[in-house]
Amino acid sequence: MSLRHALLALLDAGPMTGYELAKQFDQSADRVWHAPHPQIYTELRRLEAEQLVVADEQPRGTKAVKRAYRITEDGAAELTRWVSEVEAPQRVRDVAYLKATYFEYTAPETVRRHFELHKAHHQEQLHRWERHVAQLRAHETELLQRRLAQAPEERHEAIVAYKVHVYEGMAERARTEIEWAERGLELAAKLGR
Amino acid sequence: MSLRHALLALLDAGPMTGYELAKQFDQSADRVWHAPHPQIYTELRRLEAEQLVVADEQPRGTKAVKRAYRITEDGAAELTRWVSEVEAPQRVRDVAYLKATYFEYTAPETVRRHFELHKAHHQEQLHRWERHVAQLRAHETELLQRRLAQAPEERHEAIVAYKVHVYEGMAERARTEIEWAERGLELAAKLGR
Image 1 (cartoon, each protein chain N blue to C red):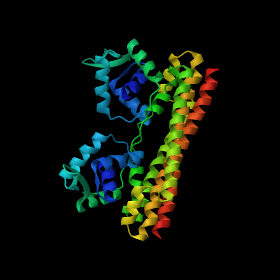
Image 2: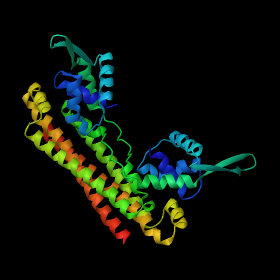
Image 3: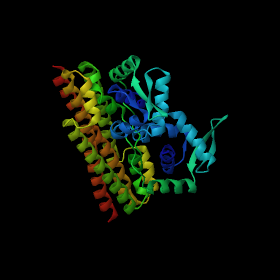
Image 4: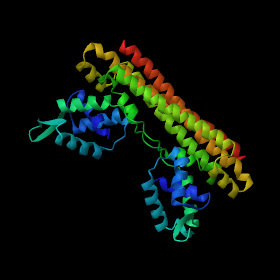
């Protein structure tokens, strides 16, 4: 379960409300770990029950309160433990590739639409990753600024460099998928003749 | 849910028992869609209840019976429907990349072990995909032989070509991951100095 660690990492940059966390999640962690908002709120309550985070209540206007979560020492220890743990790589489950194994069952026109969608999706992803790499290098994201503001100077290079490495890797993956779809389009054209 | 479609596709090449299906699954479909054996048996019973497959009982020795599953017309129609349906691409959930975003929390030596494992895993995968591509091109896999024996001659090229395209794509993905891990190792060495 990695949603909890993504949330702990976000809170390690400073306290946030559930709403702010969900928003940050959409803007950053969601890029490598997709989770719908209800799952985020459920996991936050679990983290609170396990005392890995605590909620500070602050007045919002005159009547309401807002709950800002912050990471506890136990939470920070759990985050470090998880990052340090070297796990077995995940098994593959890719519906696009599974389906493509059986493209002989469908018309070349449908195959073409499959590969066009695959290509368009990964082109969009590629632009996202490239933009994000540029933002990270320029220290432009709010989350990175918060994290750098908290961390000693000598760790700044590593903080930025590992994130850049991940998003450059995502960009490279997207390029691989675009090329696969392009070769698929050529194949469909050839077989459809 | 794609396990059911992987099973329907296997049965479309000819009847098989649950045991044979599980074995075939490990040897072929498992490469793009991992599923543990109990899930396979559960899904087979569901497919039978929905009459997408039927089981023929055959004697095994003098006392036991074995159940050989075969695909029904409804099952074949469902397989074709699924292959033809163009779906939205999956969202990313990759624990290795998520974790790598936070490598500043751990020691360079641990980072090195993460990337070494990632590289070794994908090198092993790469050999599997390359071997499988060679086997497909040579029509060496039993499943492909069964499928070709059933299909009209004019479809043979497409049957082989789409499968080769998928496994070449998997090989290319593995190469992308190996290169990512190698750049990660260089980064860890640089930051660890």
